[in-house]
Length: 349
Image 1: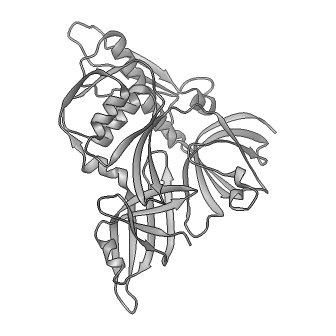
Image 2: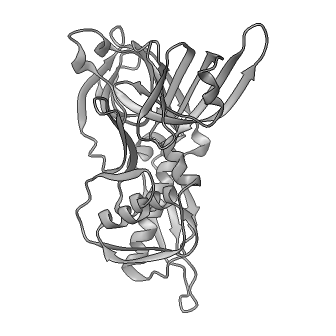
Image 3: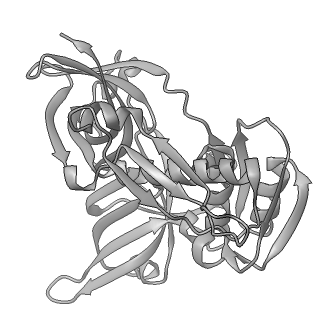
């Protein structure tokens, strides 16, 4: 049984362990909305779970940290607790808020350091090495929202990572900014081997292949600046008789931008909005028998953000897709459910 550990309130070390949990499930995804749920018999040691405890556990070889946010206490012949916990990086949404500020042109690293100052998180991996940037906000914002703005600014993904030094019993939290190079991992999922079941969820009413992004109105401009962005993968799946499925998007822009800076801002906002809309339009959920849980098959591991090949013999088609979500039972590491929301056809079988 995979243990769930109790973390000190200052978040620095492990101070306890819960082994007798029941039905523990974990869900992680690339929107950073994680969840841990389980039940446990109540005793003197579990009372702390009613007090927004910090919890730590391992899933798929990675550490994840949570804060208990929902508790149900069941009284009767046996007293037990039903727990739901959400990721500790949610604290950056509700605890760590920043007043309006304006930073002069500097590196992305210095901007991230400023946002994370006096939080329990550190700047981690940042693959961005291009030009320096200025950064500002004109009203109170959470550190989480600001980190998202930085990620959008440089076209990277925002990821959160927990590192545990088990020997020293010390926990470190990192914020990474990663660009996805779409490189295949070498992992291939096949029916009658590790692909147990594949379920497609398709919602054509929500998908768009193109957005016309409107800029702010200006007194001296007869027409509003407009940028058109397209999603090639969505077009391949969802075009209608060769025509784009389009919509108009009007983002809120507070900065006073003009010319090239405004055009680039509209492109970034439009592209992010298009990806967000299309993400929920096409989703595959695949039940996987994890071969890497067997000795000698460690190379068959699966992980978040991994690009894999999916061999669908029922369609006679080979797909390339990225794992955007993983869920499973802590007590059953041999099985997992993977969600894919970025799917590309690459050939026929």
